[in-house]
Length: 481
Ligand code: BGP
Image 1 (cartoon, protein in one colour):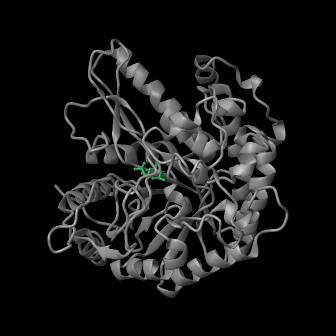
Image 2: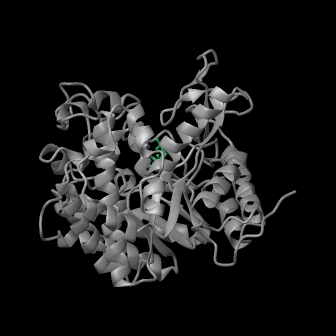
Image 3: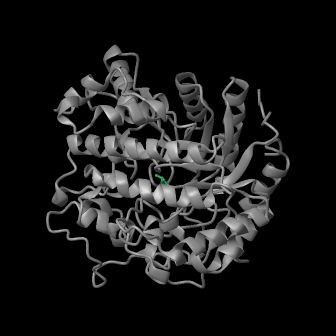
């Protein structure tokens, strides 16, 4: 049975992040961000964790694709026009913190940085596209890392608060939907991008990651408070990386491990941001990681702030599911540059080892909605693949259409189950630089960008087969798949 009864005002759109598409990394006063010093390659996170890593741009050894991105900084009008041609109702993008506050700790914002986002937002509105803004998406100013040590330092709260207040105040009349931190829970896997933590700046051990999270929770609650003071109707959400997690088999030990992995990975950050308080399993989780809650630096006022300013909705990314087995690691591991784990024999994986699981999405939506009873927004999903133009220069990405179609069907099914789902913004609606590898060859877009891993190409945009397909999907409100 297929259920495709999407609400009338469903937010169909697409998603990007500043550091992965804008380029112009030092133009008009922009400062360096963490993303600007991450070298290209699958081992980029391993490189930054070497003891001799020193946060400089080593042009002799590495390419830095974020520096050029897909040159969206100069082509955003053309790109947003293409989004509008597809019929986007919304467009999720991030505001590069280092364009507004080049070092992160200044008092006065960079006027040219603001002017850029004034224009991006005005262009969206011109086409009746609702802007959806991520305040911080893996691109904190580098200076906040080198001088303050990243999010483990409580001063970051005041810097983020000032940044958030600046953009919320400037744009609250035009932008209704906001998210405070992209994939906040991803620090389990890559604390460097989400928290600015690496081994050589005071560590990225678990206690430090949880301290950084606490500081981010407080900063996020400030953004919610400021946003609601400007307009109580503003919707300020969290953004989680969600991977539906299965126990390998009926062995209760594996099922218990699955429950615990869900608490730690999928739910911990959301529990605090949505419910406004640390969950019941906090002490147990911290004990498992070798420390106590009271080892963290927090105050009663901060806990009250969290309680009083929970988020309005839950934004999340969903690309894959995971399998947990603790009894014996006898089953094959699957690669995956985001989350690794046990291979699920019932699923196929992408070329990057991400296990494709549309039904897992219906489960994810039910799990999140039952837990929180607040609207959900799928703000990332998609198939990373190598797209090759055929002899007539066309990209026939039927594999992507097939992936998205199956995932949209499961969204429909979850709505049938009673889930309140606001919208859907597939990731990288235009090809952009991959977060985990810094490469161009892993593409998600409906729009092909002529650029390769070595930075060669015309940067011209071409519509893929999926472009017309998605246009039909939106025009039919999800019934014509
Ligand atoms: C998410 C990030 C995005 C994005 C996406 C795809 O984790 O929020 O920034 O890039 O994953 O990942 P990748 O680019 O590594 O394929």
